[in-house]
Amino acid sequence: MLELHELTKRYGRRTVLHSVTATVPAGTITALLGPNGAGKSTLLHAINGLIPVDAGTVSVFDRKGEPASLRTIGFCPDDLPMADLLTGMEYLDLVQGARRISVPERVMDRLLRGMRLSDAAHSLIDTYSHGMRRKLQLIAALLHDPNVLVLDEPIRGLDPESSAIMKQLLRRYAARGNAVLLSTHDLMVADQLCDRVLVLEHGRLRASGDLASIRGEAADGTLETSFLAMTGLAAEAGRAADDFFAGLDDLARPVDTR
Image (cartoon, rainbow, N blue to C red; front, side):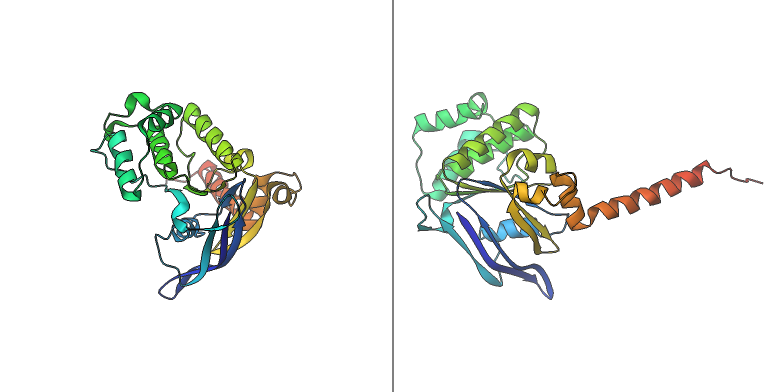
């Protein structure tokens, strides 16, 4: 389980996270939703200790509910930072060295086979597709058997096969008693994959709850309608369409070129 208590982050006089308090229960996949600039990536980096916070705490509990180290978190960032001149296997060896762990060769072979990366394990990462990089990154994030997995846009840009593999792995990983928190702009992914939802807006937690309760706030019972309404994006989309078609109407009017 992952618990956030009043996390606050400032850059100078600008507060980008306002006392965010939330729980990601063990055995669940929780979606972190929010418009661009809501503070999602900042929150994920704060959870992983990659940036200091000005106030608040991040707590991790193991599968038995006992306090655990933040080092038990696995993280897959959105920007895919990898050493392109290494092979996939060399990269995984580098991760093992950094974490001071040693994964048996037979286990590594099974992990690579499960991700359908066996044939590319000794190829340079520079030759990998986006989906292959994503899958290699997930292996690296799970090598130390974390209790909590945090991912930033894990499905974005994946082909159908890689997307299906990623979704199945995340479901089964959560089912083993682990907590998964993933940030996504794809509301369909959140609707299909996640059990719970956190909505962040302007650095504040706008909503938190199970998927059914968040859906239930919309007249049509959909996550998309509920999210767009609570963030004001539905009204903004309407205004944008009005402006656009006003421009098209102007184009349709005869222009006097005399």
